[in-house]
Length: 391
Ligand SMILES: *Cc1c(COP(=O)(O)O)cnc(C)c1O
Image (cartoon, rainbow, N blue to C red):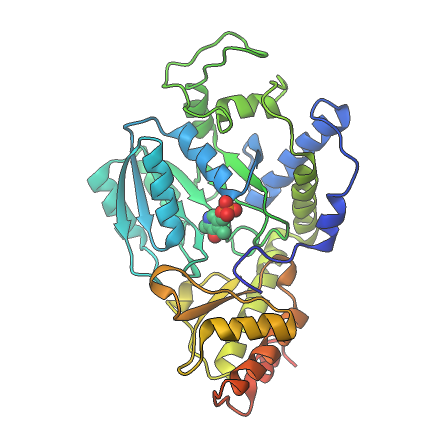
């Protein structure tokens, strides 16, 4: 019950144990096309170029940034938690001229703040995390795409922590590039990074295409050649497209897992999945309050799938986490940076966004707190959660 990775859905693990085929097997090219269509549903997009990057979530981030940003181009990163610093670091490594704006942890940016930063900096690309698990905050994105379009700025977002558990609309919100990972609300293991790219993003990428071998139409782009082979989206698009460029050996088991994650989510319905995360996230948050604990941050902008809660006085946070794990087999999260030692982060995401998981976690935590000498209100956390469930 941490902030990710989470327990994978058993159906996803089962799908991953299917027999392997290589990427040129007709069955596999069929699966690849199917995965593209499934993830269009997950991202709520018509983008043709919607596919998987093999690697953990940051493989998707690196592929997007190294392919969309040339050295020297300006990237604006509004930072409200640890993963904003990751975007800054990756953009810096690829030679971008990186400028940032920072928010106190536990808060999000207003659209007006982002617009004024865009006006001041005139970046080539805005890189913005949607849900940052380090603070549990969910940055509203609805208005950002229109601001970027009005100023001729490409808009990239890291939706790893939020996709599937919080509203996300790539097309409606004008997002040019978004990436994710399986190990949060998508309910799978880490190791595959879904990505979607707008036509405008694809134009930028194709302008940087410099393929010297393989199935090549001979075209060489005008833009600066992408400084990574593995993350060269101009080649990866052709690998996933009809050209079937021989780029890398498909991570077949991961593709099976990613396909099952999306299939299950779409069978449930994306809006239903978001509502499920909202319900169990609310039950967890109310349950923690019922234990007499205080939630961290601007809870009006909290992600549905994770909550940060202040560690009560007199309790050693790591010892309590160890007791949760050793006595009850339940993992809850520690925290980073300015929040280290101050808050626990408890997830209700993917396969763990379930009533029984919420109730067991609250009951176990109550026992750990009592053993640690904390006075817990008589009504307790389980009762507070039950009220959310309408019992
Ligand atoms: C969890 C998380 C990641 C994880 O990246 P990995 O490469 O899969 O470890 C990236 N971005 C955000 C916003 C996250 O919450």
